[in-house]
Image 1: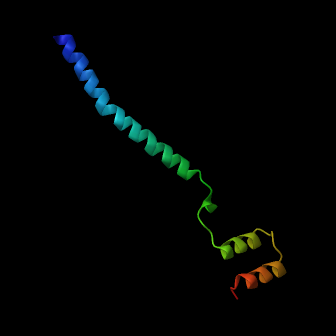
Image 2 (image 1 turned 180 degrees about the horizontal axis):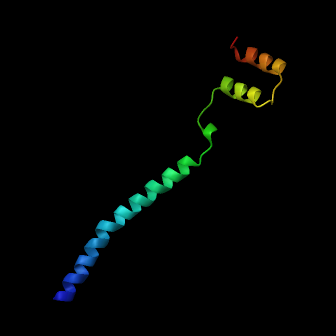
Image 3 (image 1 turned 180 degrees about the vertical axis):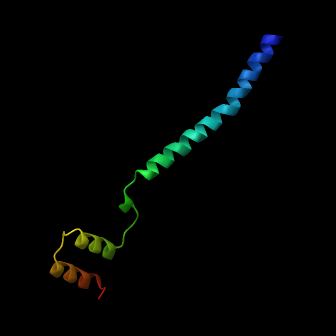
Amino acid sequence: MMYHDTYWNMGIMWVIWLPIMVFCFIFLFRFFVKSNTNTFSEKESPLEILKRRYANGELSTAEFEERKKILGDN
């Protein structure tokens, strides 16, 4: 009977520890994936994109002002 109890206890331990390990793995995976995402992945407004492109030097001042007027922000 002693061996039967030992195997039963080992089975119960797997039932308890396996979900805990899976939860920890999922938590750590999401934490590290979220920390490596691009900072611009959130929805940016068109004006924010325009300002970012102007700040990066992709647009001249004239292009920036023209596109800003088109967007309707004076």
